Amino acid sequence: MAFLINGANIKIGPAGSSGLGNLKGIEHCKELGLQAMEVEFTHGVQMGNSTAFEIGKLAVELGIDLSVHAPYFVNLTSLEKAKIEASKKRILTSCERANHLGAKNVIFHAAFYGKENPEAVYSKVKDEILEMMKYIKEKKWNVVLCPETTGKQSQFGTVDELMQLHKETGCGLCVDFAHIYARASGKIDYDEVFKKLMLEKASLKHIQAHFSGIEYGPKGERKHILTKKEFFRPLLDAIISAKANITIINESPDPLRDCVMMKKMVEEKKN
Image 1 (cartoon, rainbow, N blue to C red):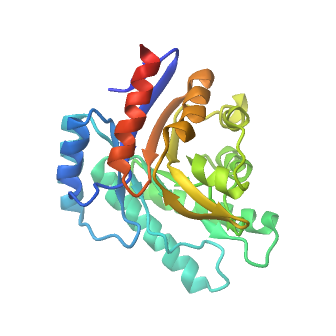
Image 2 (cartoon, rainbow, N blue to C red):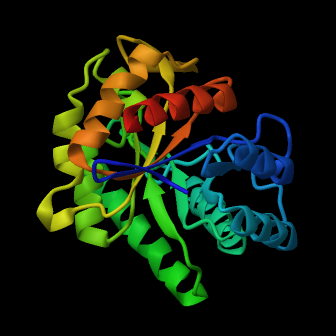
Image 3 (tube, rainbow, N blue to C red):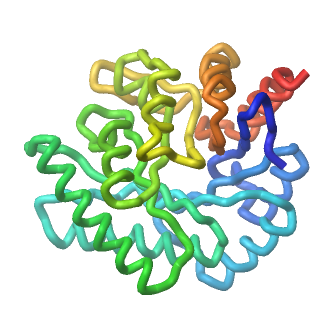
């Protein structure tokens, strides 16, 4: 059950099962009082539909919301058409498994700018998203494509780009607040981000999000690190202020530990 605080609706869970396997991971999330878990296909989809169905069945029984992270090897604007097709296949295979898992949101890093200008890259990503959405509709899969805000300046995926994509295609998005922070060399105005996410004409009724500590350099993200309380506190305050309906997936090297820490901080806000 979500944490309800002054109009905000907050769910917390880890990226992956920390080596427990998806079934035990879901059970452990329940034991820890968490409400979500992201199934990681980051290095390839190594799961069949029947296994996905069993995992999804347990998640429903225990009240754990699942999402899926598609493989990292995706670039919808590659100069090589074969790589674009392979990227779409990875995303759509993830969508098929997500449908059997009962995981609505399928998250992926969409593209790189390369030598093209951002407007041209946006147009290409939009076309590929629309084509995949058409295929998903034909297959009657109950999933939503969620390109993610990215942490490197070389990657497509700013908040503005993804909100425009959401507005023009109806796709979802995943807001990685740590990526936004790293991309801007340690700067983030959470209130401004939530204003963009909750614009009246393109408002996200539910925000799928990632968060963790993060190490960055001049070009943006370097790696995820453990999450400190003082790093999470400004985001938590902004969530409550915005009265956001949000699921936060922690991607730190020890996501279960950090999820428990974040959960305790949320509970303290309720008291």
